[in-house]
Image 1 (cartoon, rainbow, N blue to C red):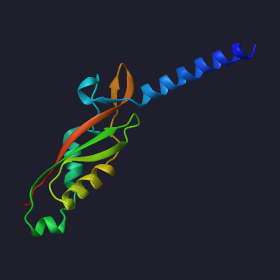
Image 2: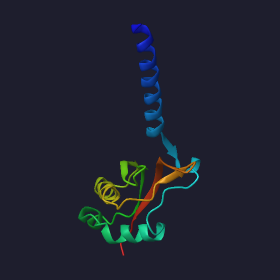
Image 3: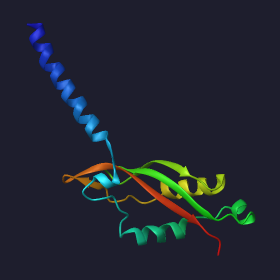
Length: 130
């Protein structure tokens, strides 16, 4: 009798584990029906960056210019997580780009088959002195 009870419990646990792992899967932005986006579109996102990036003093002094390439995950909630520098510029500009992305307002989540999913996203943050 105990074996009959254990079997359904194991099946239910396996199903829950399977559902949880699907919910945690990260999709490439090219594999979703609707890619994640910043509220108001990318134009607004670049305005956000322009208002919030503080050009590091060391970068100003050294006349550093260029792009910091980042990757991050747009969660199902729109929160940005796992921010990583893919190709950096300097330690200071990399840290500033990561800071601003981490502080970004929530995005609109990516959609796959009508449901929000976790999506890996890539972006370049430009550091250019006026």
